[in-house]
Image (tube, rainbow, N blue to C red):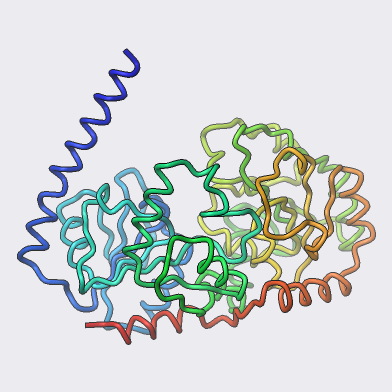
Length: 397
C-alpha cells in the first residue's frame, strides 16, 4: 500500500506540473522577454537573503533602469522590504508572467525549471550566484555519494541553462571549473554578500539595531556561536559549558559584559527542541535572524566547527575558533586539512578554554592573511555587486 501511495503521489505531482506549464507555454509563445526586468529568488522562494538580496540592494541604488521582482512562497513573511521591490507569490498568474518574460533570472541555489514552470528563453540570462564562497566541505561532483540521483540530475540540467556563475577567490574558480557540471562564464567579481564586510561605516548601525531587537547593550562583547548542521539532529556536539567559557571570555576581553549569540543551522528550526542549549543567561538565540552576514559584522569573535562562515569572518580581521568534538564522526571530506587552517581547533571543553586563555591575536591575523593570500587566493574588495551589475548592463537587450 505504501508503494501504491508513492506512485499515486508521483503521478499527481507530474500531472500538476504538466498543467502548470501550460500557461508558461502560451506566455513564451506570444509575449516577448521584457528588457530590464529582473526576477530574484533565494533558497527555493523561502527567503529574502544571501547573494540575490545584496545584489538587489545595490541595483536599487545604482541601476534604476532595472525593475526587480522577488518571488516568495505563500507562507513566507515579506513585510519590511524596500517598496521598489515588487513581491510576487510563487505559482500566481503574475509569477508565470515574470518567470517567462524576465530578462535576468537570479538565484543562489539549484533550480528545477520544470517544477518552477518555466523554460529559459534565448533572450533570458540565468545567473547562478550560489550560496557559498570558499568551501571547506566537499561539494557537487566530489560529494555525489551524499547528494543522490535527484539532486545530481537537477544540478546537471541547471548547469546547462546557466549563463553566469561568480567567484570570490582562485580556489572557488577552480572548484566551479572542475567540480561543478558547468562549462559557462565565470565572473571573478567577488561575492555580493561579502561586500558588507568592507562597508565598515554601516557596522555601527547594524549593531545598534540588532542589539535593540534582542535587548542587548551595544557595549557588549558579542560572541557568535554558529555550528553547522548534523543529519542526526543530535544536540550533543553543540553543547558548551557557557559558564566556564564566558568566564574565560571575560578575562580575554577585560569586561563582564559578554553575550553569546547562538545561531543554529536553519534546518534545525521547528524540528529539534533547542532549549537545553539556552540554559545559561548569557546565551541569546538568534537562529531566526534573517541575515547571517550582519551577525558576522557585529560579532567580536566567531566560534564554529565545519561551517564556511569561518572564511567569511576572516575578512573582518577578528578572532575565530573551531570547536568540534565530533570531528572523527562528522568527516564528509574536506578541501583543506584542519591542520592547515589558520584557526585554532578545540576538540573538548578544556581545549576551548585553553585556546581562549592563550589566544594570540597578532599571530592569528598573520596566519589568516597568509592562508587567504596563498591557499585561497581571495580577491574580495567590496565591489562584487558593482561588477555583476556592470555585467548585466553589458548583456542587456
